[in-house]
Length: 128
Image (tube, rainbow, N blue to C red):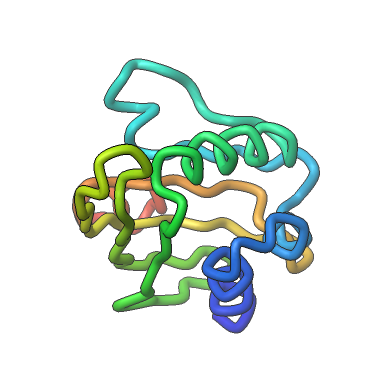
């Protein structure tokens, strides 16, 4: 869980290099919006960097708050609140999503985002 909090702190500082230091070079990153739009996951550090730049272009003050975290061996499941303001409109955005992170040798190899807890637990192989 310590790695998750450190990665989140780097994310909120908008320090992409510090954030990517927690990512495996072959990371699979699948944001909820990509899944909803029928797209595929971002792959590797450069894929995450591309997503990051797009996100901050729309929400330059985007930040996250971990509201709940559970650890299951090499998998963490989190409820996270996102906040930001639209670059063009200034409109406030606030949303809660569930995230699943899989870790190997202190690097994130898979990071998936979901609309609800049940989907996250199922993706983590923890559903009943």
